[in-house]
Length: 253
Ligand code: HPA
Image 1: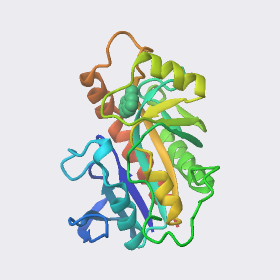
Image 2 (image 1 turned 45 degrees about the vertical axis):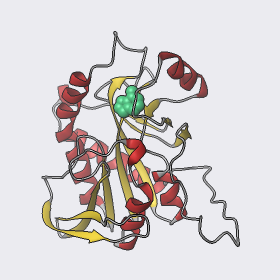
Image 3 (image 1 turned 180 degrees about the horizontal axis):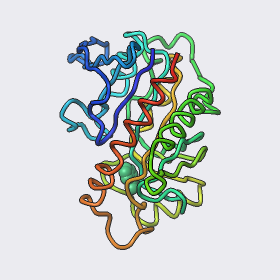
Image 4 (image 1 turned 120 degrees about the vertical axis):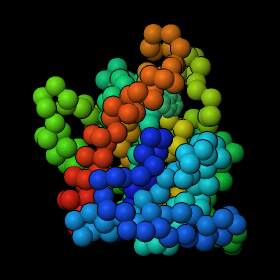
């Protein structure tokens, strides 16, 4: 079963039939995790809003362990994560998309493993390739299909491959931090891929990300980063994003 984790600006998927909710208890919180159940062309798809139902949980306060645990216990096998990012690569400007194949984790103090209670055997997962290449291919196919139904002038750009740098937030970065991240090889910067991606690997879920660039990273655009512009970019891209997800769901078996 396919799961979608929605980020900022994607708290529901109106194009799919909403058939219910499930509240999944987990060992990581007194509160259950709310999972939306959708149907699309007779396929069950589960959806989780990363920032909570009201979109009010900041990146460093998200209970990543509870979320990933809940998706696993409801029977998800493949997880498509939607993450908004700032563009560092000149080709990753606002409105563009990227399916990263690598990440660098700059976040800290986040509960980042399921292997904490039983310390009788130390577990080190292989994380050389943090994203599932099969699922990345499926995302790229869905993206191409969605672009085909767009007018010529509304085509969206996609970078296949690239490095996602995950910062702690909730503040945005300094210009110097972005220069450092650029030197490190980061193409985009966001705050939510980790530890989500590594927890998915720990629990053996296939995980890939479609990142949506909503601003130039600090120091790379004109002046300060504007929340109004970010909101507008998200609004303008929301329909296309849902169209990509519909195409992915259509192709999913
Ligand atoms: N930095 C970090 N996270 C982000 C950004 C950014 O510029 N834009 C959207 N998410």
